[in-house]
Image (cartoon, rainbow, N blue to C red):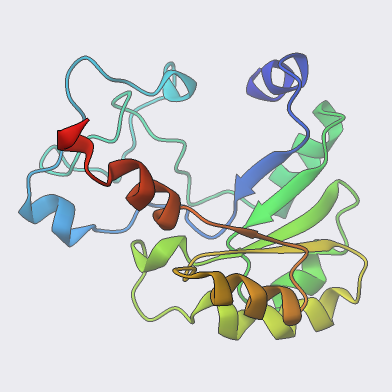
Length: 184
């Protein structure tokens, strides 16, 4: 249903996180006892079954449920392609091997090279380091975007020079919005 809602709302693509079947232990969130305030929830996660991997001591990121499922596979990407007209962008591809597999799935139209800001798995490569091999692997047959590790304008220029068609910037935008927030 979420895919059809996105189509009706005028979205141009579906972004599917493919490398994160289970949310990593976010130690800063645990240390700071992070929880969403009770008046906030994540409507897109409502109605999902609670995660079997999340303990009651772990942070609540909304809805009390998670779309996590370690059994997700490429068949699920094909299924999603069969029920939507929207192009599918795979988020979290960090190797040429996975980029090559993505080419075998017709609904996939792009790859978002992302390591989720390094918050989910430690030891993953920097996105800027993974980008060239993914660009080479898809050889222009899929669009390639970069997300993560972008702090200043020259980071964007480097990613574009290495073949990214677009660069997503999250933290700089949040920092800008938060600047002097107490003085507004």
